Image 1 (cartoon, rainbow, N blue to C red):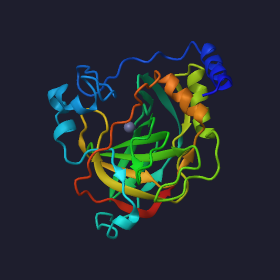
Image 2: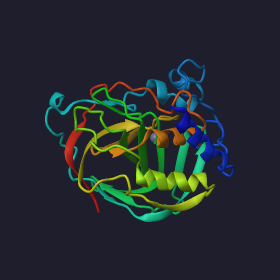
Image 3: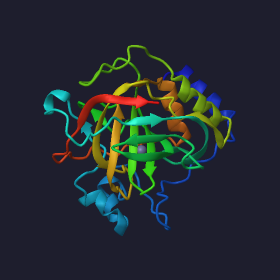
Image 4: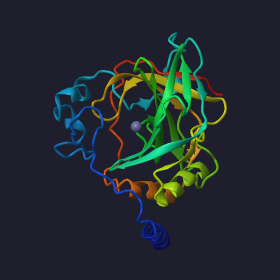
Length: 284
Ligand SMILES: [Zn+2]
């Protein structure tokens, strides 16, 4: 980062004393608070998550964990028959609540059912949360991206589905699709950053802002990427990349506490899991 960019970053933060201070890594599942780290060398780093609490065991023993490095289509044999229908996303403009924990920049839906939904394989999933990882947790053909958004959905039966969107600086290429040729800041992410920097804890968000109409997608069955690493999570990766600027990524990292080690769990083994490609993800 050059000196001018640094000056801009610090100028923004100097006038933004109202930003909620990050709190340590926590999981909000269960009653107790167990801390975990993204520093692979730390005693509570990703290789040791499984040992931090009895219900984190799946982080070590699970055979269908996330994230994964998406393989190239040429390596796959057709479309698996688990896809009975195309996913249909219904998004909306709604108020989301900003929650800032170290390593997590979360936008929560307070009124579940009112923030958008995804229909997939005959089941309906409500959007409950949007959050971000930097660098990206999922890779594509070995390529890592500067930012990844997760749109977390839950069905009435408690099943989880996450729609993932990758952000590119432009110029990077992977085996699925070319990265966007345009470069520069992402207008929708700018709006979110602007609300956060002004200290707002609740603000309107277009929950479909990062999804292109009729983009293709890849899907597989994986897990939560944070403890307790629960499995049977349906992952849908939108093929179309969003653009992001280096300054926006720096701002995000600053807001969530620097991210010295990032907030991306290392890539997990596929263990023979099927990845489906290139059907239409319909944004209704
Ligand atoms: Zn996530």
